[in-house]
Image 1 (cartoon, rainbow, N blue to C red):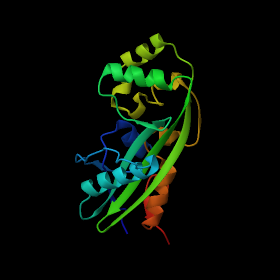
Image 2 (tube, rainbow, N blue to C red):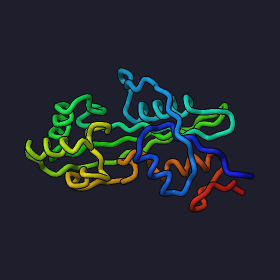
Image 3 (cartoon, rainbow, N blue to C red):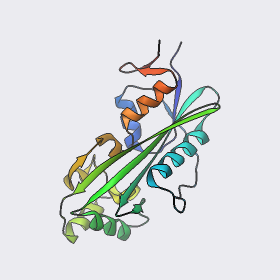
Length: 197
């Protein structure tokens, strides 16, 4: 049986890059969904719910749709994408010298079925002075990212260490995605998906 057609329900160039690195062919289809975290909702639950909404919205009849949502949590507060440069500077300065958690929910949807998984990674920033926070934000990199940083770019210079899945911090926990493929009867065979036997 031919491999399923894949839809990536994300505008994220990092997620697209990771799927391409795996050698998987996909199309991008994004429909806007309300990405608000509900009152009292735990971050892991919110990340999975939002990933599910995105995957379901992008699905069509003969494909598997991949949805993702990444949340950065510091001292119990969810830090979304900054809306302006000043907010980005505040976020980076807030995270400097401290630990935070990155949750990514990933969902795989087929007609009549959606499966989800979530990954959590602990991240520590090195100590930064206010000038460094401003210099990092001035690169423009933080503006479309939860928590106002990207670990794979200039942000590599401010992340001191992580505990957990690096790709999760990029926005696509690869092992969780491969687990979802297996739940749907497919295994990753280094560049392609093949039916489980």
